[in-house]
Length: 390
Image (cartoon, rainbow, N blue to C red; front, side, top):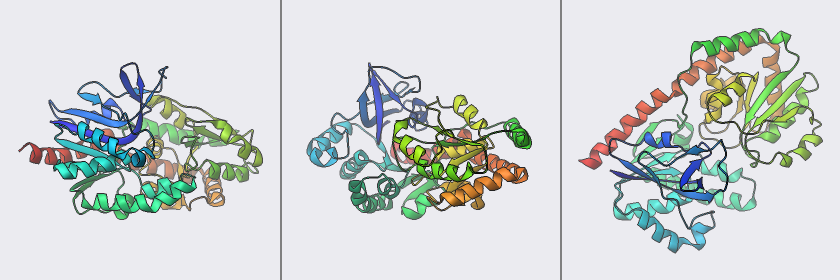
């Protein structure tokens, strides 16, 4: 069976190979394949001259990358639509099934064409387009937010098969009349109890610490990961504690320097750059005392689940699937830096509460291990493929 996967993800092309910054990988695509299946990946692409260590290869093992030669930015959907439609129809030649990950402008035009051709498809709902556009920062994005929201709502409603990464949030905002499952795209291994034991020991020895470390994961180039909220909370905390705020993620740190200076926390903020996924990130999380996720847009955040799997106490906000993961006592209103600072202080002051949160987070994260999710996803796709092949 030939499968087409569609999303607006930007792959990197180096020589004749294709790479991802981590959201997509060859391993991810193997989830969708049965014996002798092939999957064609239709996304955006960016040519690069140097291959960075953080990049993960996408093509190979029955995964063939066929990126768009026309669609590079959202405006292309409107000004190059005729050519784009021709390209989409070429990509759909001999395709038996489509996996369309939304929100995606490429996905939207593919949806139009597969319906005309009666090609079966599934929608993967991984994020809320309203939150994405409204919190992106520009006035154009805010103007488009209600249009894309309503369009996506109808696309999901009419789909025969939908996978949601959340347990409740996306289902309630974008309901479907078709078959559905909840299955996160998180990819963590089952974690040994030793990890939780090490975390508890770390908390019990906090009285010997001179500094406390708080961490946030997210691109520095966007406004919706909550960096400004974290910095404001830090400005309150530094009056009482010797605390460091560590940012992990790609992007230009200079964007944040003026705001950091304005909040008088230059000596308390650290930019840790980008780390390869897996053990390097886990080690970074193991060194944190508290994980912070004050995002304005999320589906079901992978970084939060990874931090929870390390037994890390965490504080989040009422965005996307965050409230589905954390103890409600440690979920604050968006942008409410005062409440976030208060919750951080509460944790730092009481190691028993920290241990309780560490244990709750660790055990909750075990519901999102690779084996459990892959089995759930595999069974769902098997049912769909059986109907197609018969």
